[in-house]
Length: 170
Image 1 (cartoon, rainbow, N blue to C red):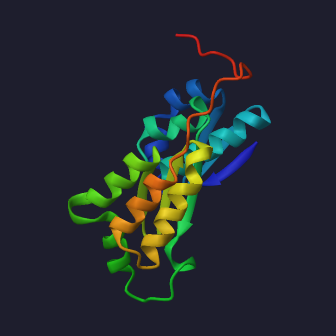
Image 2 (image 1 turned 60 degrees about the horizontal axis):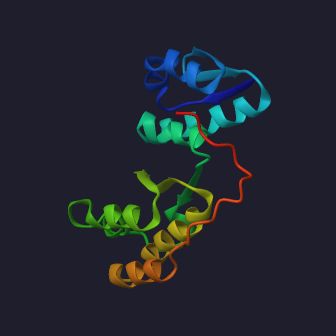
Image 3 (image 1 turned 60 degrees about the vertical axis):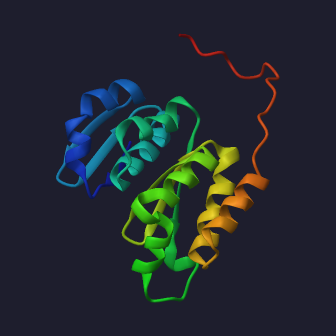
């Protein structure tokens, strides 16, 4: 049994039944406390999914953590810069009309979300490192074009299937 303190318990309460079905756990809420009960591995995955939902990711993207073996990582902008104008740094990451963030998502096959002074990333484990590097370069002041060139140069090659992973039933 795990207890999570959520900033947005209403979002979890609204989709409680759906989450319990998908994550094979039992969810109970009391105020901002969300209690998860199930098998330990299911509890761990549910904790990550609920963190992602609390961070602001849509439900379908958050559920990818379980269904597609995606990872959820959070970067704090303050860890990578001493500048005080965090609004300008966040603006650089988002770009004009969200163009920079969309391009990063396309080049890294990851989903991005900004909340306060943190950036959440959901994606396949092999792509997360490139996505983190790209965001860190932007925080440190690199030009967007240089970051895009870095990502294009360091594209992850698809892994050939060795037959180790079970095929998904359709």
